[in-house]
Length: 295
Image 1 (cartoon, rainbow, N blue to C red):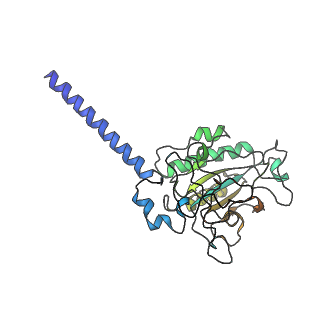
Image 2: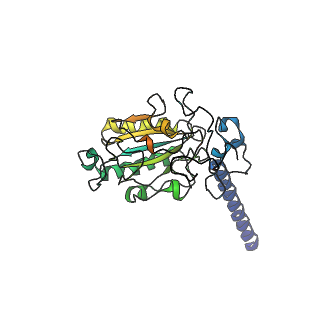
Image 3: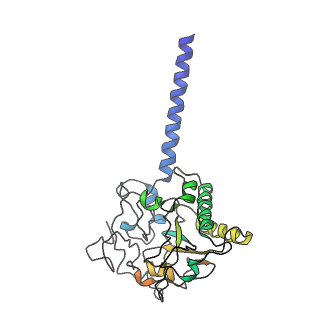
């Protein structure tokens, strides 16, 4: 009797482990990214690919980016010749003060009511919690670390997402490091060269997370209305490879400011083609031998 009972327990334990394994694999498969040379019907679909070149739609299995010049002969980045490209992903930036910053615009060197560095870090934690709660995830953003660690950067360190890349293959929100000391980049006033400290997150495309960008905008609006969102300027912008258009095109419906709209330095951008990423080594633009419009 004892032997049969032991065998039953062992059998049930084996079935339970197998069920957990199957569930784990199913969950991972359902949320995995589009990998070059991997078979995934979703990543082969017309709904996923849209107008983007293949090199912008996939990531290598080791998470390194595929260098991509983008569609250099197309007009997708010219607001006078084409409609706004479909966003491959979005970034949300929150701008905050840093009293120790020597290269920041004057407004961002002074704290005020509802406008502090500590408050901005709490808001960073709360946004991480919002993203974690919005959908079940295999690897949630570490909310405690988002609060305490300005260097916390899953987008680059964990997922290999090149800054500014369209990253359409990435299916879930991720967190970038805090940019507290502005020395270069687009988030500076082009007239003065002085910057705006900020933190940011990547929001995946509607293909992976339908409506998440709009829900995030609404989340910030509710926080601001309640008075617990701080007096921080917030920028939502698309990522398409058309970097200047993605950030400063006044006609783009995908660019959204909450608070004051700040002037940005568009001269710093190196990509100006649909699907272009910054994996191509260059000072001012992708060289001719870096990537192609197809893999």
